[in-house]
Amino acid sequence: MDQQSLYKSEAGKAAVLEIYHQLLNKITVPYEELLLNTRYGKTYVIASGSITSPPLILLHGSGSNATMWVGDISHYSQSYRVYAVDIPGDPGKSEDIRHPLKNDAYAEWMNDVLRALHLEQATLIGISLGAWMAVNYAVKHPEKVDKLVLMSPSGIGPQRVSFLFKAMPFLLMGEKGRDKVSRLVNGIVELPEQSMQNTKIIARHFRFRSETIPIFTDQELSRLNMPVLLIAGEKDVMLHSQKTAARLSSLLPHANIQLLPEYGHVLIRQTLRILPFLSGNSK
Image 1 (cartoon, rainbow, N blue to C red):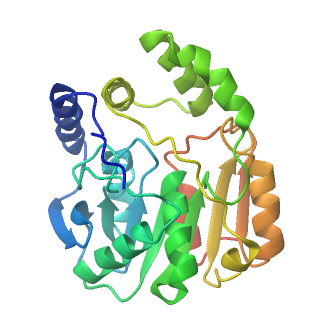
Image 2: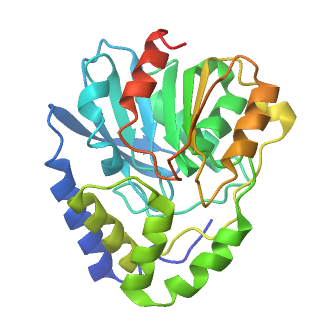
Image 3: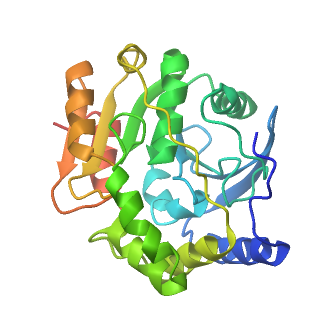
């Protein structure tokens, strides 16, 4: 467990939470704010949609929080009970404690989240590290995952070590350098202005995870017997998306693989690709 404060200062934490609240105002459908009890502390959840609809859990990427889904929640909540979760150890409103990825902490935490929500099973959508969290849970509890959507997933293909060397000089150049790194990661995706501001505030005040993300074994990935959708950008500068797609395709012939030629690591506004898969209408 990482005992170092996740934020560089209390003022920085306050700045992150301030823009968090501003982004909540962008949600265009009714929603609830839930605070769940887990063995790893409090977990904050944005819940929307009919309580009688099938449950859908959204897991954000590293260094982000549930507000990354504000543009998607209205689409998903028409057919699903949506739970956008703040992962503990990231810059959100859940517990400010980061746990190692190599032990069972995050799978146990995810199990506690489903239990607190009174869910026997749910569909999981994750991006980047959130996709790793989804796979990590699904390989341990496949019976509890109805469908699995993985966007730019970590842990299946290798990380691009070259990106770390390319990004390091820019990260030492202050905000202009961080903007350059953001453009590399975002690719063709244009984030809304307030989302860009959110990203900058987090980069300025938050201590990012430096731990190497574990790669799942063939045996683990072979346990994913539920419907699986993979969406990845061919121009991802952080992960080898082609190797990710090839490996998942060879291990899971039933998986729906969508490689997007012009996209990079950041994938937003993908509901038009994801909703047909969830409803069983995708090809």
